[in-house]
Length: 183
Image (cartoon, rainbow, N blue to C red):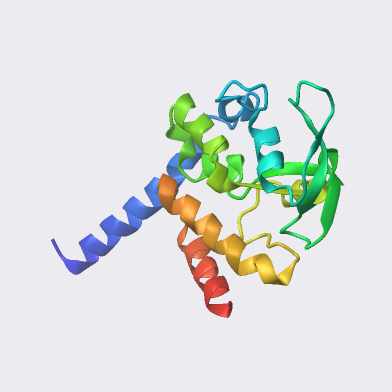
C-alpha cells in the first residue's frame, strides 16, 4: 500500500468516524437525567447533597425533615460571587450532557449516561443565569467569566472527557491545548 493510499485511508477513517454522529440517536435529556437520585435514601437528592457539602456555612432547610436546602453560603466558581439562597443556584455539568452525547456518549447505555449525569466530579453549583448562558457549549465556545477559575474549569473539563473516553475533534483539541498553554 502506498503512502498516498495509507494517507487517504486514515483521512477517510477520520471523516467517517465523525460523520457517524449524524446518525446517532437524538439527544434526550431524560435518558441522561430523568431526575436527581437519592442514592443513600436519606431524602436528599444529589442536588441537595451538593448544596450541603459545598456550603461555606451551616445550611437551613425548607422543612423539618431536612430534605431540601433553603439557605447556606456558596461561592460561584464562574463569577466569584456569593449566594445565600439555594434556589439561585443550578447544578452545572462541567461537561454538559448534550456535549457528551455529541462526543461519543450517544452510544452509551442508559445506566452509564445516568452515572455520568450524577458524577460529582462533573458537577458544580453555579449562578443559574450563568449555567443557562453556557448551555451545552465546550471550552472552545464558552469559558467562565471569572479569570482565576478558567484553568481549573478547563482541567476539570478535560479530566471528565478523558475519564469517560469522550471524543474531541482535531479543532477542539488544538483550541483546548492553546487555552491550557495560555494559562
